[in-house]
Length: 121
Image 1 (cartoon, rainbow, N blue to C red):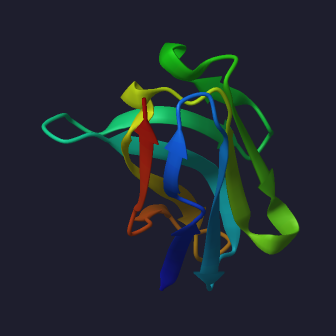
Image 2 (cartoon, one colour):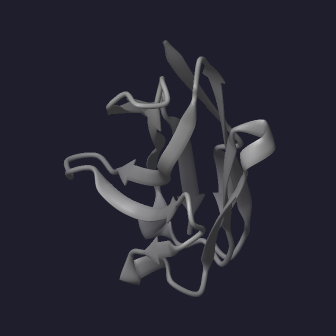
């Protein structure tokens, strides 16, 4: 099985920065894509940013120019650099990996447990 562990969340003032990390462990053969999602109280989980195995990135309009997704494939680690944070960025942030466990096998998606980001105004 694959486990994802997020870290880096916390409390920050508006305008500040945080860097989230997501470390994947387990029997991963290959990674198809990785992404960050967030869920604020009373709202649905939404995509923040994702990155494909080819390095193509995609961002939600609300975070473009402020957040940067990156990865270290050798370490199976995903990052999210969040700058110019706003109160509306407050949410639980989750990472998701889509991976193959065997060379010719299907892809599976795995989620982290979430890390709280709170931005005070």
